[in-house]
Length: 74
Image (cartoon, rainbow, N blue to C red):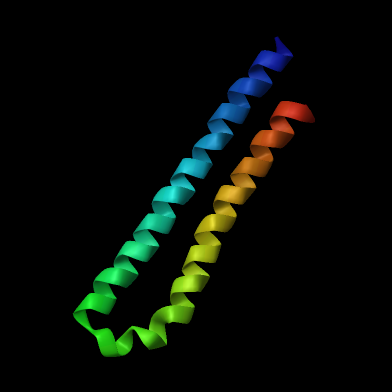
């Protein structure tokens, strides 16, 4: 019974990976939309783009880590 619950919890924690993918898509899409509206300001916003991508991807990595911990350590 406990192993089954760990796998259910791991599956729920893995939803965070999908949410991170949606977040990365939103960050990149909004940057692209802004860059196409004002190409001269795009170069100054590149660092902000990479910071946003890193934060969004870090949440996906953390949820993947929690999923693995629930599957194998609990």
